[in-house]
Length: 620
Image (cartoon, rainbow, N blue to C red; front, side, top):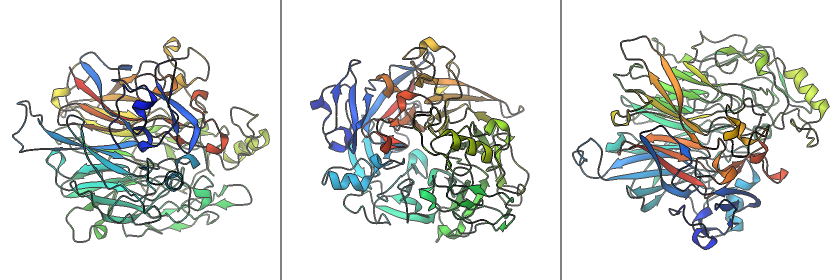
């Protein structure tokens, strides 16, 4: 994988750069952007021309630029200073540093994203659907590639390399800019394909020179969400361990029912409810597919490979223990997917505690719901060392999941949906929509009662906005709308499982005009800023938009110079906000037809290699 120039508009200029050197459809477009195809499904194309991010609107006093483009699904960024700690520019910023960019590999379900199929079709070509780390110098010159599987796509352990079936999600140095060990998270999830990859998630170390990948903790849960983002504090490594299901119940959306069930962090009592996947299959929460046990008590860590391991949680382990897996303990739980995590500074209003961005449930599976919000939480252990509890799967944001606003409307990802493309917007037969609404409205509880009092979120975000990164600003970034102690967070945006639940406030700004249902109705694909009260004052959060594409669309819709799916955010040693943009993804198109895949068999989520970008937002 090489750095690609966003100015290379011709086929000759882009071949050998996009999609790991594989020839794909790259044609001129009216807008001047390149047309880039998925190499396994060449009918699935997008427009790509990030330029210098000049179509991203930021406040006065900030400027956007592109550090690298033409990448394959970047999700993580880490930095390491070169030279001693006194080698800075006089303002506390390192003069020389390395940039480590994680390309995540196969991360979304579709036949078009199959890394093994690519290896068969394009033998000897660099595989864009397997993970690796690209190491650049501060001038964006590629130095080396670390940890990439090459020929061993059948191996399950990822010996000395990242696991080939992906995704890898995050990387971080234990000592930040000063280095130390480089940690990462990976899995053999192969996203919903199944079977055999349950408990395949790992926390790993990566040799920053040779690239050798060594397992630090293995056999962590893997289902809908693998082991995800990393953080460090006081001799512990923390990670977000997403739920293995969408809403607490294994359904057909979970590898046809073969994925592992969720694992509780405390003893729980199940409700009497069981959930219908059609074909006579009913399932209780926190149970294998087709297993019913209404009213049963499920013990903490049931079915986990290690004591202390559970999901929908923030877990931690001691960094320097002889056997780190023996020290695993839950720090906080009750999240559907508490993906984005970051510790606040000690002198901050949050007093060094952990901020968590949770991604809410989709409309799909055996317990489908609509309009579940995403939420911002403050995570902490209770005084007795037990994890605090944030309410999932029976609490969405501040509200019980049985509220009518969460009733499913019927969609192509629902287990009970009988496909009928002639019946939009659900694309299910009218009879199956009626059945979905009869069985799942209102949404029934998974648990008989919460295992402890529920900690409510600090704030909520729009449904399907998708938290994917949080970081606290350095003082050099403070200006305009950004106050001292502020945090930036990024929202990846929806995947088209449900119809859009919002309309643009200024329709004429949309790239395709005020057409009802167009992709400019989407939320997410943006950066926001949170300003906090001062440490000695009552806690207060003020949130506003910081950066979003001028058109309101994802960039691939019209080929604009902007973001598609921001999935990683870190402040660099230069004082800038570095944003990893995953690239273009074609989806069900429920929230806007411009995002829909072309061929039904390519459902549900088509990754487009070579469209990832690293943006920087810097103070001017």
